[in-house]
Length: 290
Image (cartoon, rainbow, N blue to C red; front, top):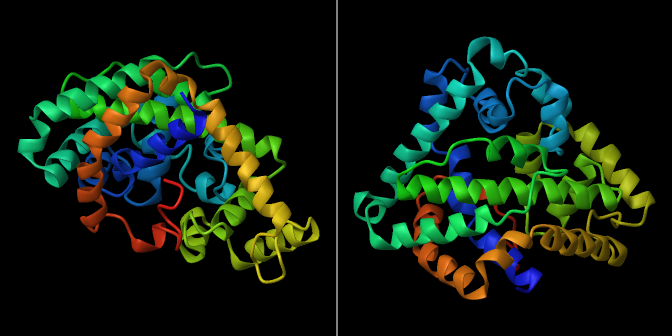
């Protein structure tokens, strides 16, 4: 299977995974497990499958967040809630969010069962945990039984496997977490700048200093746009990310991947139109490479 087709398929399904970061149902369950609302539910909720890890570990695997933002809530989160309880709460929240957003008819449909089976085939074709710390945490979890949760679990395994590989690609390109965020935003297909700064916890001074370094490296123009070298480097990163994440999609095959994407497309549109995601999450060229 062509690695770029695999990458486009993965990106087309992203909203069905990432709704867990914005759905109020998930937030409510995580707070019910003992966590504080806000950033703690994100950092602890996503990292909980790795166990009660340190702030440094979360910073390393999440990559482009200000370390101080994470240190403010981790490891304090683990004194408030057990990681296993957090994992269980998150899945209960995803269950509720899927039911709210997609409705019981979709949840119980033959299409949902088929999509879950296809996504599971891909996820179970992931070759291993080598160099994939966040994926490795999720790989230890038991598979859910209900099809919509099987779908979310499979997409999450695929997402975190791809994300670990993306970090490796960024390291290969010599981009720090903040530099990766800035260049991704400058490409116009990632977060809008205001969202990227506030969500990732970077001050204007931090951002400006990193932009200056990228200008010195001739990766950004003085106006903050990618230079030709900057665009080329981002293309190298994305190509390598696609390549490093292609194995499970090859296991599913082009026909299976196309079928999964087709089945999921109306659900992704429903989620996109629900208002769940802030518009600043999407850059001006969102969708061009999806």
